[in-house]
Image (tube, rainbow, N blue to C red; front, side):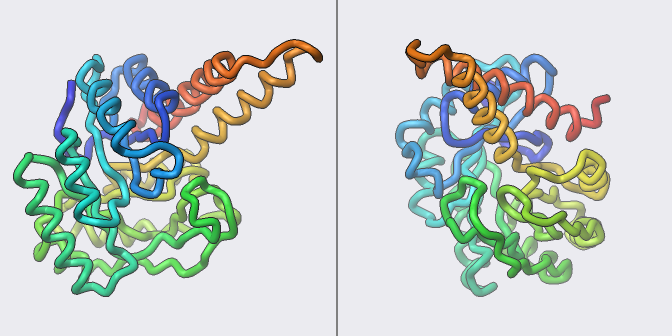
Length: 278
């Protein structure tokens, strides 16, 4: 059930087959649509050329609507690779570039996506970066967040023709080192001035249940969620290893099985939160 990304689905997986299966499995159990995604910065873990076709195939076979999205694409060439594989959504991330360069590259990405009918996400403002730069949710937090200007967002959306906009309203990628200070008026104002374009929330892991729901009420229609699901899988793997008696072998297949089960339960709770399910 490979679907075009329309910013209604709100949960995502990254990196590997186990998290992919955990997310699709959780979505099936709850009967909700879902986005699975892969970011360019994840190449050190597994290349897009290897995991991309697997993502597309799993989406086609799923019993719920599944969209396949490229997150944080840094170059147009990389975005094209994903489109050629059958991805139904792409994100061009030019948030650290000057406005004009971000706009022109985003326009080019939108033109590329239009040829296949894929959805296009872009980013305006900055969620901040991690010193590790590894995309694994660790490292010291950079406080250089730049909140999205709603008037500039209106101009950006009109000039690029994008389908969704990732806004900076107080979140940060990875694990929070301090409690996030979220400004939901940023989301409301962007929605008001852009004919209610779907707003994307990056850096969602660690946000409270109520703040997630307030974000959805304000106009967030896609939430990037991975770090705490990944952490849950790691904790389950560590706990399993502790149960193995001294001198007995530890089998990798058993470790990843426990991790996958934990990730699925974690992501199901996130899905319930985003879908306003009790």
